[in-house]
Image (cartoon, rainbow, N blue to C red; front, top):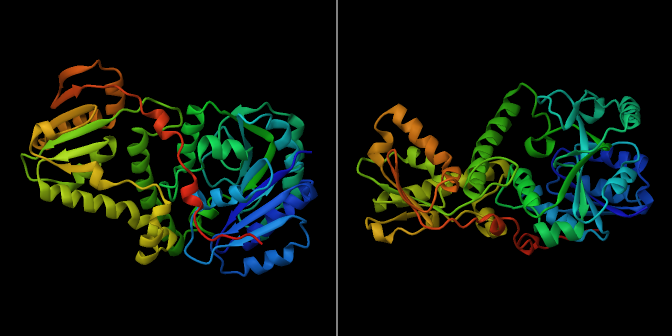
Length: 434
């Protein structure tokens, strides 16, 4: 059997989930052939000491404990994968339990370096049903997990021998060389969500084969790593966590639009687009913030507004995520260089001179025309939110479209520039596995 490096991210209050996962790896894989790497991003349960003792049970278990603010799996996964000694890496979250012969089914389906294999999730009925997962309740927390029932169900599922389907999500297995040399790891600008959707687009652009095996399956308690334990409960603490995660998700979606021009999982052309806004009316920053993600850069004809817009966008881009990860201002200032962040001083510019406006494709309009009435605003905003598709289907030249003047000069598809990056930036730091 080929050797696998199982890479596990864990954090606060997750020790019992992690121990359940490790026990399932011992029982359902030929664990003596493989390596297990655990990155403890935050520890309040002596998880590190527990795992050092647990090393007696797993021959090749390596553990790293982060003693500072959490990094998030978008970054610490690269640290885990970089440490892996085997050609094949399998990414697992600590709120998962692996099914029967998990390693065997990974090896059978991960046929070459061009393939990325996702493992089927069996989840409790917390989220809506969807075609790529199985909804079945074996428990919401480790102490109530119906392990024997889960094992029996997995045997039934595997006996069906369902054909593979397309798709990608965690848990997944991939060749280490493919992950680093082609993808360059997760894009760490996505700090709380959406990194998986971004990765799917990049995988498609790189021509990777994305498949899911029903036989390589896990039980997934869901959202423990992103929202914390007990996130599904109807209490004040859970409501706060979910509201904060929702605000952070809003920022991640904006980052996604800034990068790709739309939200989805299949590649679409991406063009350089400039919004040139003549502020002939007093500014509404909320309106400007609402359309900003859909362009590459925005020019406004008021310097004070440009500065305020830069400040507002910058603050919102880190505020909710930093609260989510409990970052202090000092820690953020010292560590933000490890994340691929938007530079709002480059995105938001001031000029009153039309000739100073740069960009492959320039969309100019008066602010008063944009906001003159609600119906006009909705129609005009719909044009801006779908501006990438409009540029794609329009020939080079100058056009009038509603309140907008289009100057389409060059239609250079920027997809390939966004598909990979230098992952070494996110590996910086003193992280030692024991």
